[in-house]
Image 1 (cartoon, protein in one colour):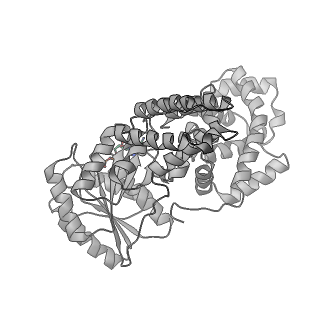
Image 2 (image 1 turned 60 degrees about the horizontal axis):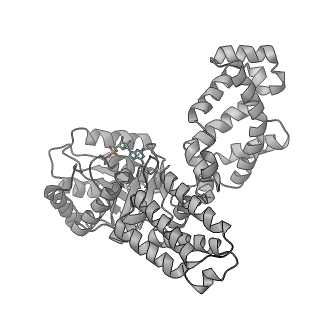
Image 3 (image 1 turned 90 degrees about the vertical axis):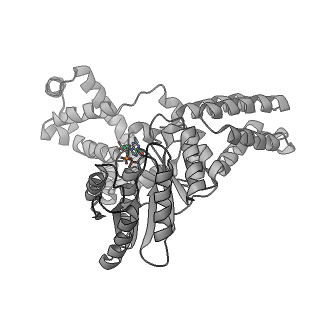
Length: 441
Ligand code: GDP
């Protein structure tokens, strides 16, 4: 997950501050110098960092902090508040037009993740009860139309195309007309990107914008490109005017700086964050939750939301009943594991649990480890899966051989199984009472 190194640095700075009973002006200055370096290393725009640190300094070197009984905590509180402010305070919802269909125009450079994000957005709008239509307006890249058709097929949303012989603006107009006839109340236009910003591309986008007057122009930028992402956003905003930004690839090894700078530089909100290649890997961007994640304070709210989307409430209730009655079996374990996997990688899940980030460094939780466990369960007989107590040493040897693991692995897993029961119980408790939900309801 992005921000790992920034989170570590913040936690070190804060733990030094928290140890001090009283803070001198010098202590605060030193800490803020570290904050500044950490942000610059995370690729946050220089001007943004300067202002951010100045604002914190002004607030931190005041009576409120210096005379507080817990000055370290006060400084952390201020940093948190300023981070939230930097990212835009409140989440910024997608808006809908009064007249149907609502038209969104997706723009961005090639490879940023525009086509994938178009489908992610459509999938979520569909979940919340809308009837979206995707429009293939990239007539230059040979595979672009096919790609949109493939992702559209995966989420079962229709794709409007007129091949690559028409002008994008004409395709967009025809698509909106077709949406009206077919009852599609949302139209999402996937425009063509280029490797770099060029006049032709901007000209074409402006032409589409002027002719169809979209409700929102959403710019898709790749968070992995750091400062470049921010420059791209500034450029698009100056030339065509955007309504919001969608940051992609925040799951990768990004330093995360763009998430912190884009809003301040463009004054346009980040509306969504994409955190993986799967079509469900999109989240509403909540500044306060992101700040909390960056400071290593977790993001339990997002975790619960993800869980309620991915996990079948009925099954969760049944599991909980089993936990209570101690009937939990390997079959149940397997099923739970598969449900948890739908939430994303284990690393991502852990980063949302408060205090986990630091501990995670020492405990390598590997997605491969889960596959190993799966293979062991599949090597058990049906009776063994249903009745864990049956598994004696000779059965363990057979399971190890059958799944291509060592006997020690099997022993370790069976030991962990008991502990997992406890963990899963807490997890299932969190799920209680949550029905299926989409991003927009
Ligand atoms: P486009 O050229 O802007 O339309 O970009 P695509 O939608 O074709 O995406 C380019 C590549 O980025 C593809 O391999 C996608 O799977 C990948 N991608 C898109 N969004 C994300 C994301 O949030 N995380 C990761 N890891 N990969 C992504």
